[in-house]
Image 1 (tube, rainbow, N blue to C red):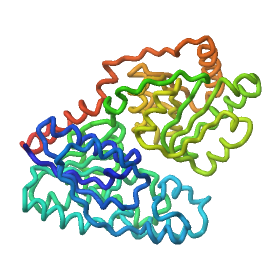
Image 2: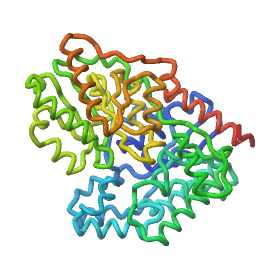
Image 3: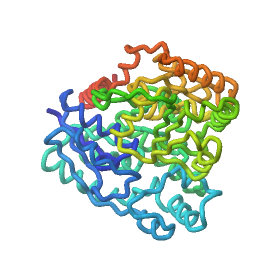
Image 4: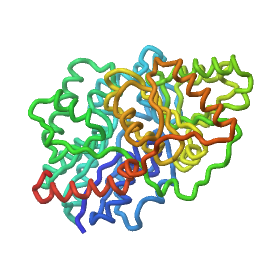
Length: 441
């Protein structure tokens, strides 16, 4: 069986959305003739969340090497008063105008001196460890997944030193992302240069949406479509097997994942307030459930009357708990925001929503999330400014629910199956075969 080095900062016991893609690749690659060798960080690293149960997906006998890392997180925690066990949400850091002074100082330090990101302290140790592992039992190909994009610098260095192909996987944009909006110009230029080097030197770049290909080609000369392969995010049917949702008395609308101001559906909340004001029964018949992190401003909005009477804030849950909540909902809320950055946005949660079953309410301007919702027939797409449409949809959904009927969409199982982790990992295995044989199909 051929061996692939998988460089992944986020790996169990890390929780959160960033771990799912590399974890599921590791789960399904052996079924496609590839032995994954995982290079990751120690179990006590500064992950944004922990989920010990995810380790059950790792195939027995998988080689996992945990290599030390120097992180600025401990110093940041001391200065800001955050617990040392919780990492900084990048979108919270990005709210520069609302950060306390200590957090602003640390954010500026991170943005200026840690390039491409705060995980750069892993680079020397990871490269050294990978070379040692290769000498003992060689790899056929190197695979890295980002963010963090330090992973790609590691992958590039290792592949060049051992003379093996390198595949770089982009779950998010690099320099176009919101992680460090306050970087000095010279630092941004250096970061952009690192991005270009990695994109050009990789044997193949994997992206999760077509728009990312367009953006990378636009930002860097010497690239064309043949330098990229599209493997979107997906879902694992095994995660949903055997979960029978209880019948909910109230129409339950569930949002899973972090929710911050840049994607917050304010007019949707206004529509809910209008319903509560016009129909007192809604206090008993409607419920909004939030699974994951909320920024302070969003939490304040949801804790204010009258909407607070129907809001249930569950906070961060394990992946298994989040899946159970998705199965319990009658509508799954997917706010993606507005503007050009929405065009290529296909967050991991939409694919979990596809598998869960309830209809999806996508609130956003045209882009990948809207396209997938429509392609799979799994729900409705509304513009973030269409308050009237949101209110009408909620009224119809409440009427249907009160009559004891299920909400219906034109769900297309064949289109949904294309996003299963097993199918997507098969595509990755084919790509790995291609680059190791010298073909770029």
